[in-house]
Length: 373
Image (cartoon, rainbow, N blue to C red; front, side):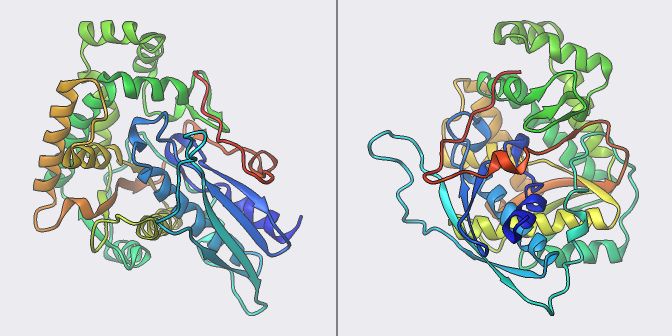
């Protein structure tokens, strides 16, 4: 394997929303890589402004930087400018962002201590043990986030507040058709692993709820009927409230100001990945709680994300409650929210596409959309 292939073989394990892997690679030379960064705004209600995908691009670039050190190389990046014309004038399609990567070998370079944890890092959606984080653990995670900061919600009342907020936000996810189409496409039913989707065993749902979900999600009319008959309380308690209580803390990664530029979102994504890998190194797992931030941002901007007026109103409530929870700071500056706790056995896990399916030629093809499960 060439140096770029070795680095990318490890870096492909970077996280992305719903295991979408919104990137492809082109190996230019023995020292150069082009990363084509896509977004999922055309089919994902959680990424209508492309911000979620761009955070993931930052996580990928940080993973490339860490992976490169395992092979005695430093990674230098070139970012596209914010003035880049993203939409193709002829087709109307969004062009991918092009990130340049140059690998510089250095015989004195030591591997980054986080490199061994790139593959081990995972999402834990099941309840964790509510063990109190020690001062040294907090400090390590806070140092990993710099120059961004960490705001902790660790006490029982603080965890309950964020858990209740996530449960309220979950009602939006579970009742709008725009989210249904996403969930139906990204869940791999009857699976413990998947290269390009979320295996149902990883969702944090017990056998009864999982059977209900699979039955209800056969069609949007059926899901609407099930929601009318049984409501959404049970799944929201099981998937959001109880896990939100049963963890060590909720951690928010906070920037000095709202990350409105691509460079700022890339920097935030890089910090988030270092936080996640540091937690893994400390023997802990995380679960992103990103959708409350997304819906709150839509509400603040008046961005229409659904045909449901009730959900629009609920998003405004989520935004107001986030503002109250982050008293003393601007909620728009919060780049990431996740719960964290001691590692437990994974019942299911997303894998990654093999490297040969991620390496493309020039010009880059459109990113395939997930097929319905």
